[in-house]
Amino acid sequence: MNLATLGYTAGWQLIRLLPESWARGLFQAGADYAARRGGAGVRQLRTNLRRVVPQAGDEELDGLVRESLRSYARYWREAFRLPGMDHRAVFEKCDGLISGVENLDAALREGTGAVVALPHSGNWDMAGVWLVGHSGTFTTVAERLKPESLYRKFVAYRETLGFEVLPLTGGDRPTSTVLAERLRANKVVCLLADRDLTTSGVPVTFFGEQTLMPAGPAHLAATTGAALLPVGCWNTEDNWQFRIHPPIKVSTVPAATQALADVFAADIAAHPTDWHMLQKLWLADLPESRRTALARRLAR
Image (cartoon, rainbow, N blue to C red):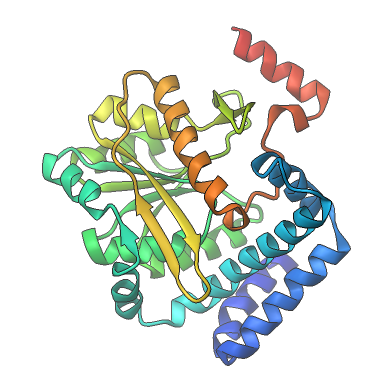
């Protein structure tokens, strides 16, 4: 077991034992230290937020970065404590904090399942606990992290919450086949859908610049007839908020993916500090060699 795996294991075992006030103070202090230190991820977060809030001056942007890192630290604090919480109580609490439930219920009444697409915002694990309580086990996909022991820790964590977790690669059967089966059985598939800087990503305009987002949500909806539902997640001081948007019409995969990006952008612009994007996202930020390779693929 390597240091990363040991660290996450210790987090899940120890953080839940701390009093809430201690855990809150510890993670906020860590976020503030990261903001002052200004590592590569923090610098990229600042670059990303500058696009989301272009009118912000340097001082305001400093505050946005600090609050975004606090939000991200809060996600991890809650993730480490969530396995030890009463999940029924979490569901009941979240049930009063979510809007647009009628959009999900209407999709499931149609009998063709629902593809729920989310950005990396707020606490999507809390949204998942609510969904399990409302509609039963749903299926999601996890990137196969290295080392394998760390990947297994994350899968086990989400399985304790009632999620079915499929590997992005290396499964016994193609992941897309299993997801389509779940949808045809009128189940829910949940996918994080705001970043895919690979040759399979779909070009979209996001906050006025070009990037790539996953084709999977729109492709699954197009091939199975499932509803494509964007979902926004953000934090309040002591709670969370979730919004299930109306279904996106899937005429083509590129058009539907652009429509998803537009919904994500509106929610992120309204709650910029709860968007946890510390990685390069826009094509303009990529090294020239990679940008050129992607441009060739897009041209084809």
